[in-house]
Length: 558
Image 1 (tube, one colour):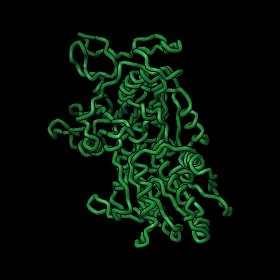
Image 2 (image 1 turned 120 degrees about the horizontal axis):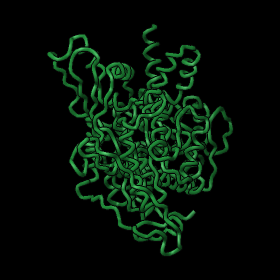
Image 3 (image 1 turned 90 degrees about the vertical axis):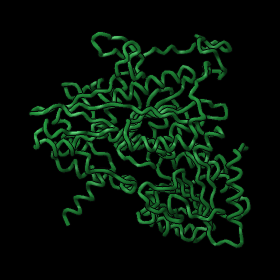
Image 4 (image 1 turned 180 degrees about the horizontal axis):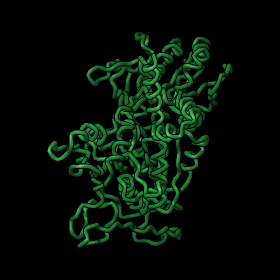
């Protein structure tokens, strides 16, 4: 396969080979820290190919975070090297092939990997290596399984973990890597944007305040994502104050679904619906130029994912692709979306790090985990360039929340957003012949392709003296200046119910990785209880929170 490598890939390949061949160094680990979408997989496959050709290694082991990513690795590795990889899922004693496996499998397959590394000169490629913390199962298993590897190639776009834990084989101090400078290559997201390897990202901070209506004494409570909650002791009885302070958390309310009276139909005046409206409008605009563009929704748990999928259907008339861990064919659904023209895909955590769907342009971000690592990995799904002629941008719709706001500011500073203008071209690309056309063209002037007509979506100003129709992405009325769709009313009972679920369930990176191994067993235990109320409540928990709950219950029972 003839490859046209990017300049950074050439530099990283040469530096890694020089590091591995050095006679004076004992550290056999090379780190590539490159932005999502920059091309780490191809770079690593070429390094493997060069080492094979030099007869420096005989075998390659690739460890990746998810089955979908393992599949992508298998395909790209063969395209570059011409060699087939054995995908390890269960116990497999076949020692004759290169191996690709998930991080989850390392602990179960330590003997297999140890034997491979001891038998042949082996290159181990660790994709999304930040997961393998020294103190966690993945890090301990990797250190044991690959101790005898001749070379280790570490790949990540987010080397600094949010929880401060140190990954196995390389460390950092004060936010800076301490791995030898000769044994690493770094390409930041900002640099990747400058070099046109990644799209620039623009963040829409979606404002909103919740009005909590009290049934007893006192005035309504207002909760926002930036100012939080203020309680006037003189206006609210003391018996409510503690409960309100505990439950009226903006982000908890923001990710809690709102239904109509039947308890099943999504309320289109919910906070989530208003986020989706903005994302839909932005994607519609993008599709005028790029008809195949798609959008991704990341939800905090399965119930909310299903709710947002139904809301999207109500708002657009098209049923989106829904992917979550309870679906047996999740990988097939992701592949089907990648090859389709479907506008939206909704996921909990299945479409995250490593999953490559280049037509994604818009991200509606409402996760459970609030770590910077998760934030940047999600961003990586929409900033991957589709090629050298890709001049489009990525757009992220996120709650106006102090935590996410800080993450977004860091990304903007990194890519020097002040120097980047969000100025979409006044042309559109024909999906049939890929030629540029004027945006006003009804059909392609080169091949006659008839462009699909997309309707403009409106929402009516709720000011009774105005009622002016406005495009759904606007924050205020074009006619009277009234704020549009920012006030969401909720009862105290619902606020307490929704707040009590998540307040003590903050999750970290280790919870996420443990969830991938144990959540199915935990869900079986929940179903086996036969308690309908328990099953209903716990269905609101994401997989990683279930693992946290299990750990808490086990500790309480000791």
